[in-house]
Image (tube, rainbow over the protein chains, first blue to last red):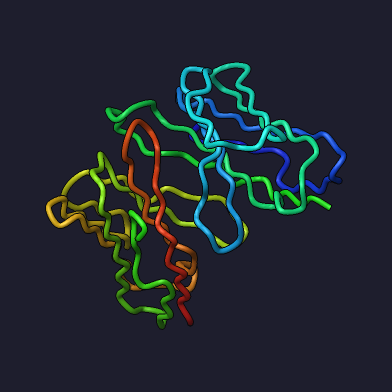
Length: 115
Length: 108
């Protein structure tokens, strides 16, 4: 299995809703990432987990809450979002550190619309 | 000034043409990635380079570490190559810094 699987593919939520995005990989990668991508812009890093521990939080608002329950799963819990949070949310995984010979594997993303 | 600069921003070609997309960076890197993103879709990793040249099918990627420059070439371009091509560099740890992307349109 060489894929990163993200669910759901599309999500519409109200500003008072609570929802979760899910990401799964079975490549044995020990680094997992959440990125946010607005239209016609490059991805922006949100969070990095290495060995199931949060290693980077790019000053993301607390209405986004990441969770890594095990080495294969990464969740992003959403609560009280704003319309400007509407974007494509991408998950990625890789070997950790500079010595990895593999590149990154990205998921196909969750298109989130906040109404 | 961005740490990763791509050119051109937009590129339109006719089917069969040879295409070059350039990437320059201003920071020390451990690797450079070329990524492809189709409209509304996820990102596919095309190449990871730390030196020299790699080839996969009609795609060729080169990097010159001394000049801090990389190029992505597409030979015999096809409409299905139409996508955004993104250069990203790996700096500290596993952090990636992305260029703004090049929108490629190949017309039949």
